[in-house]
Length: 89
Image 1: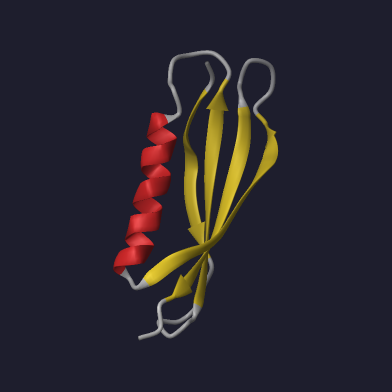
Image 2: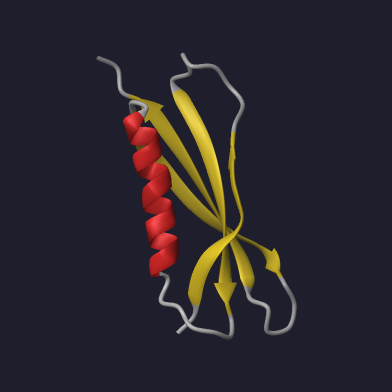
């Protein structure tokens, strides 16, 4: 079964502390050959979501898209784009 692991990491939109929405993009790489069940990717995504929750944001939207291939037997890259919304109190 193919697994996913973080590739080059995570990007975040530039903004200020009083922004209502924050956009974070995570790049995952599918392993065509090798072991892995995708658990590491779930843990990494969970870490990003919890990091934003600690800052007072909740996950508003998440989408994924294929962003290319590393070539023969190299696996594909997938981008997860998450929009977080500031909890207003």
